Length: 96
Image (tube, rainbow, N blue to C red; front, side, top):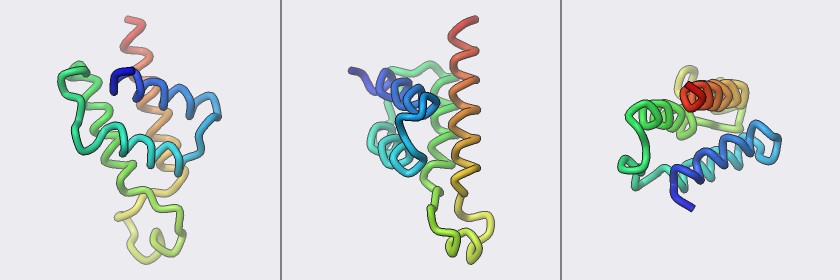
């Protein structure tokens, strides 16, 4: 399975409820970093996955972090919204 396929599988798995936010973030980082699969993704996909990656690496499950450093860490809700947004934008793009 290519990294591109793994990324889409991960997105679909989250949407289907197979992954929680923490698992999604850890797995996304393992797939996407450190070797971003630039040769497998379109420019649009790369932009969307990089944007999602920026949020994913700032996820903290700890409310203390979020309160102590406002604007530094992303909450579970923010990550959920970022994942869903990325998924629907990529799926919409594929169906055009």
